[in-house]
Image 1 (cartoon, rainbow, N blue to C red):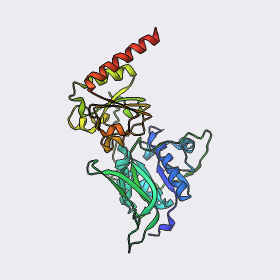
Image 2: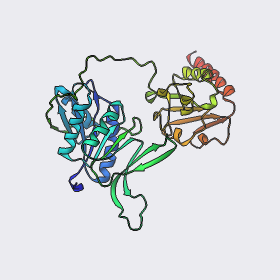
Image 3: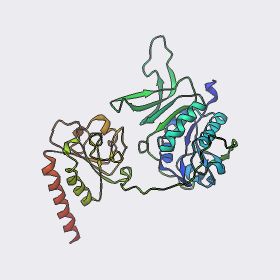
Image 4: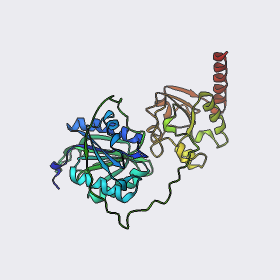
Length: 349
């Protein structure tokens, strides 16, 4: 493999029902940073049917070029045609870096494509940067420059691993939603659009979709919430989350939780914040009864304002909090809720 042939940072621009997923814009934002370090361009790969009109939207979020693979076989996501489409793009255009969102689609697509193009894949990344590999110069070993360093939680989130793919291309990673920042849209931006179709021949690997049933989620996506009231093991019981729900209701916020709460079966996984849950950036984040382990902090430290309530004055959560209250949450939270109710009522009077 001639590594010098591989150039550019490519992003799989996931779309569903001809609507680009938010993760695609987040990846383009990170791709711009990586491309700047490598002095190269950002290319979005748009796969689907009747989707060429979405290209300018990708340009507004940072794509210099958009490769469109448009075919009726790609109308709905199916593993085989999509894997064929993306691997064909990689084989033809030879990107140095290929980023895919760690969504249900991306987690299915990424590993299959990496196997087809004979490269590695680092899954569920939380940090991407350009640097040297090995990280520290080692006597007798060449230190390679301008490598993609891919950081992800390992061993159930109990440690952090930084991984490189120095001898194969492209360097591939799936990236968690909510981790990377979108750029401010560049209104009116236009991308250089190139259409490519490798040809599709249905065979026994093509799944036939008989019906599509769309379910309506009963819970609010915590990644979209502006105010989060998050509880940890210190809340004490699932029933005790009622006082957090009361506070969230007054603030117009949403309840979330730590991994310990999910592991205890108190709340569903959809509400978990942290490295093995979701990464959130609300305007205000209440950390109630949460100790502040690094795995949790990594999922919420970018919040605008962090308010911590914990009976342990030495809890690590206070190191990242903007405001901290040491005391019994069972007394503090109801009083805070009542005070807010009174303040809101007075403002309306």
